[in-house]
Image (cartoon, rainbow, N blue to C red):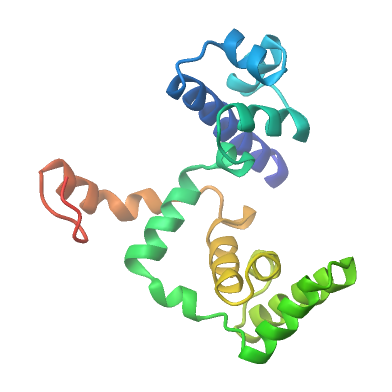
Length: 196
């Protein structure tokens, strides 16, 4: 199995699980979701069994019906683990990729132009910041994407997120890092200021 096949399989699994969970959260049958989203029931069933490869417009229609972002339908364990890890264990990860005030202004100016060239200018600022922090690959892409959303903090979050959950990190074993914390919560003990 190639890395692409592995990532595709895990992505299909996340989508299948999240569509089914979202549908149940809204007390909808597959037919009700199909009717409300304009997607066929057979497509919903294929997605929920991990056999479908829906188009982007299908994913958007389902997400809108479930009142969530399309990205939320791809939310997986590695995403959740990354957020927990970043928030509780490694807030310094957000400090690694930095933009100067001048770089933020440069990126914001590019984004404010409304031109594709401005978007690319902002992306280049983010990618360069990642390189300066000795990041490459997924983190460089994440920094560029994050900069095009919110220069500065978006740059840092994009780089840290992509560096932690990029295709080269799958499968993630971060769940094992939380066994102690989960055990404490199961025992009714406080973890990171959170009481069960």
